[in-house]
Length: 250
Image (cartoon, rainbow, N blue to C red; front, side, top):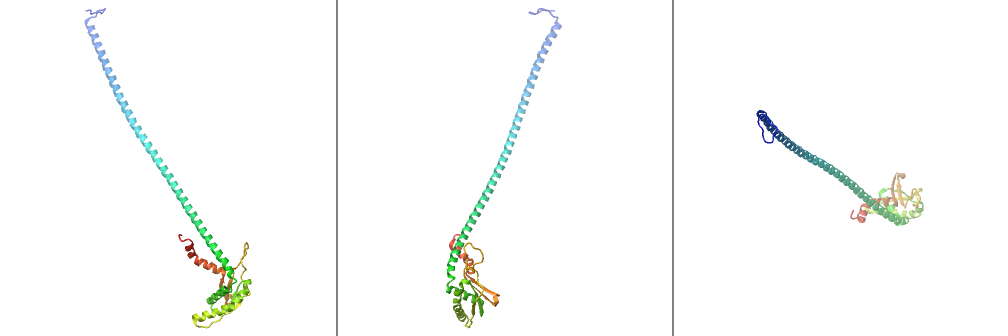
């Protein structure tokens, strides 16, 4: 037995040794536990940091992927809208060009119709000219080259045409003689059927501005030398030249 310091009791030596070893084991165990806790906490902290870092990396990758996808969608949408706008612009431009072309064609046709109308008015005044009628008859005779021809005209022009027959016969014979050296005459007579009367504003139906129609062989062969037909023929033949004069830049 022994007693120490402030101990109020005395223990046998073997018991004291066990107590001391027990206290030492308890401190060492506590130290080991503390170390283990510190190690586990450190490992947990490292693991948590690793997980957080990995999560941040995955988050960054996912954000980048989403941004890239959205950019691609925006780009595709933009390109689609651009193509739509370009298509609409092309259609609008084409329609505008076609409209302008149609308006230009319409304006040109109106000018051509006006020219035809002006010429028509002047030719109407020629329908009573014996010189003009005589030329129409002679031209028809030169195309027919017949010995007997019937001349058809408007009823109102019968007097004028009758006054042209002798001169037309003489002019025809003169031209044949000059060109071929042969003597050829043609007997002319006025047809009992008449051409339609002059056109009347606001009234439909057949009409004739004047001129003559020559027929032979019982009406089987005819030459239409009316002002209407000659005007249409001349306008059709002269149309390119007229357009060239009126619209040189076209």
